[in-house]
Length: 151
Image (cartoon, rainbow, N blue to C red; front, side, top):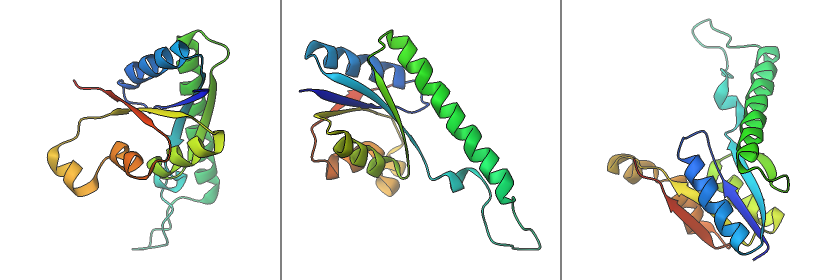
């Protein structure tokens, strides 16, 4: 095993996921990359056609919002990397649907292992929407190490 990608988000459980994934990677001498996925940025701003006389935000505001979201994500990964106190840890920000982005980046980076956590959702949410972890497990070609993160 040479490369381990650790998928993290803004949930506090990401600290445990990062620590467990990093510990495993170091035991086998693997390179580590912390991956954070931004949903399609249009979800973060009102990018709708006119309705009820409302035109939504202008593209200038949307560009500002997108830039700020990316800055926050970069700061998040910078802090997560600093927490590990290891200058060799790489970081990557992907954009798009979470599970697909994780799988695509793992393939692109030629990862040997994906590390991610499982958030606890209600049974109804899991039934209706599934979870990102489930989506990754269903479609992965790379082994996945799931870190249980319960309250």
